[in-house]
Image (tube, rainbow, N blue to C red):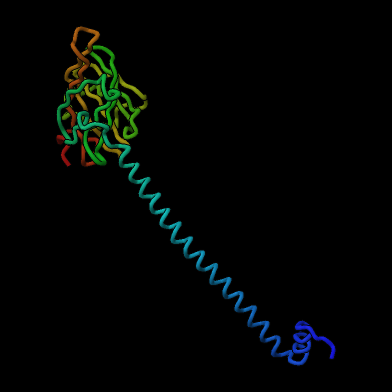
Length: 212
């Protein structure tokens, strides 16, 4: 008897049972596709969950960074109240002193000019604009802080003058310069004293005292 290989037997069987062979082949193909689809679906589900988790963590990290970005570096240079009086050494902490908190925070930044004038900047990330008030002697006399020119990076208010600052959240603060000490002009240290009011109701009108 001639030797018959397994391949020969399969070919003979397929010829004799063509319909059954087609059904079996078709079933194998369907099973394979189903397995592939299942694998793809599992991979997609895993990736979707993983990427969603990563996106969420990334968003949370970004949000946390944004909040931290406006956090004062030292409590010594921070007054969280919406109104107050500040005395600080502007030669320290890069000349920065923060007032207010949350959406009402303003990172003010100052540098030496003389014992009669001082520079203030819009450089900190929470500050949108700084402007000088030339037509009012008291903060409560400012009825529209938007009308003052905030187009320059720096302003130089004089002793007794008021500066208006807008933060990146759109709120306004008004600061009146009360005293300036300059260690190159006979003072023992560099110190700035100012009083401030933050208008927490979102308007540029300080005639109501800055209440919300």
